Length: 300
Ligand SMILES: [Zn+2]
Image (cartoon, rainbow, N blue to C red; front, side, top):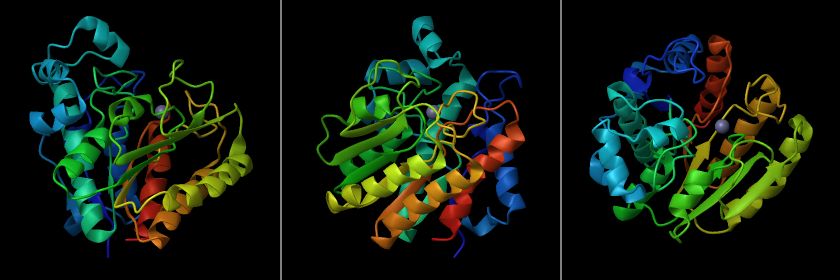
């Protein structure tokens, strides 16, 4: 079966090419996926913008209203890293709904991926760190509210700590948050996940994969998980502008294969989101994000 992929052309909010956030990676990722024979039309899904009621499960109602009205206070926009105009607001609603849709497809088919998502720095009160809404937290709370799932596991391997997800889900006993990240990477003030592993600068493939291999059984044995959200941020790569962990392409491939293979072997549905990746060479960056989809396709 082809891998179920969720995408929307408006994931790309059309920033200037020299913007610190490489917005063009979204269409280029789709190009890369077509290039490796993924993104079959019959397995491609497009989300509708997320309704406010979903967003308000994870975020303060006044903040959600501000984003939907494009009236986010400047102080918060500065923390997010860009102004929240019409296209950014739409993009945030689509990317969030995309993760909800990918999660539903994962529950149905075992695995599915969103070509956006992993906006893990958005906290309950507001966005931050290039993240407007926290798609994984919203999707977790939507599925829990609908009783589509009883137990949710978040495995966040983006190089940055999943502070926003930890903040939103900290009082939700049916969700467990795990983050493995660069100790010296953003955010400076981390918010404790249910389990955090902080790695030193320059960790590299071997040490990174050893830590991951050791922790995965512990995570899957914790509870009977109905779904795992996997944030496959590629900012762990040695050539990433923001990351400090020094993984290679092969290391990334081995990581994604290890995570997906592990949870699928345990019969747990997996929803993949792309997370962070920052490089001025955006086609190369997009190809790096495609690794998640290539690994996932082997389990579809
Ligand atoms: Zn990141």
